[in-house]
Image (tube, rainbow, N blue to C red; front, side, top):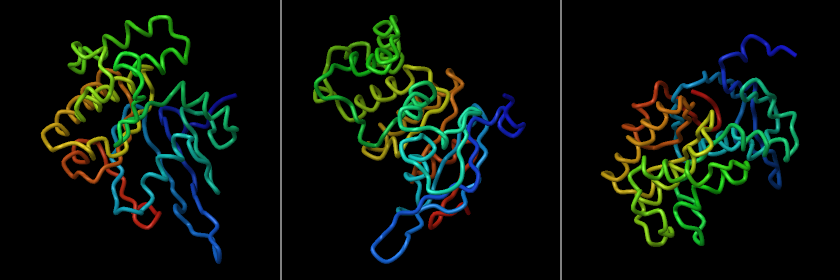
Length: 228
């Protein structure tokens, strides 16, 4: 089956994407008629006021949530036609995440946290790859430390290493510097873009930080659930 031409080289394509939730008296539209084309390898900042729908959009594009209308294609595959297991399988093949709250597993060491997504995919080189990535983000001396033995900036570097471990085609970063001081945040941003270029990843970044948005190739602005 051939993909339509507009899906080739475009890693994310949405058509009329919408999300509504039923409240007591009416349908509340969180996102309406979002038409997006994101090319493979592009870096895109998603900006807008709190409550404009940024995190909802990311959740839909990553297959963590399902839209109430419209379609999403990731890498030429229809995400909207898949069930939860299908979406999870596509996520594990294509997608990496970095969150504001790090989301590391507290009982695991830095090395084990980075190994986890590789082990879930059955990669026999999990330990080697994880150790190399932690060295790449400057944590070679911290492999056996658990999250609570690491600073916020170190935890976010572990999260970056984990996100890139599976060499995802798309990396979503939701306010990745939100819990860090500006100097540490700047270092994390540098690392994010360096790793992004080394791995030729498509980067989708939700941020309030204008300096961070300016480093992306383009900016998508949401206002009240619509693209501006």
